Image (cartoon, rainbow, N blue to C red):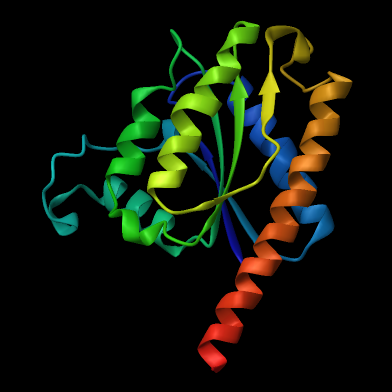
Length: 185
């Protein structure tokens, strides 16, 4: 099982702080291949519909990582009531068929309490369109959820990370078993 953690921004430390905590939690519980995709480390071209082979090597690398993953944890900041363009661009770079039947979990670093609506009204509908399975619990962290070094310290957020991780792992196991069973029929 390959889990790709996507930090859905090219700036800021908080989404990576949450994502790192989630991925470490997964690694403690199961022996899966877990990778963090930090979009700030890649010069990703704008999705314009060209053939995959016509994109830069950085963009092709990101596309390949997305295709190869069995499951995704997406961590994003919330800017002006929405998730940032680099995350949408990455989602647009590959055909929806590559997401179909895979598992997603969401985390958001937000500036105010109303920003949870971005997960509910933007990210979950995109996941539905892509025909993915989504962990029921998501992580929602406000500015006071971190210490001065951007470590997650809020007990509610830490509890949610544990709960979402358990749901994500269980959902992944069930879906993967169904895939194995379907292949064996």
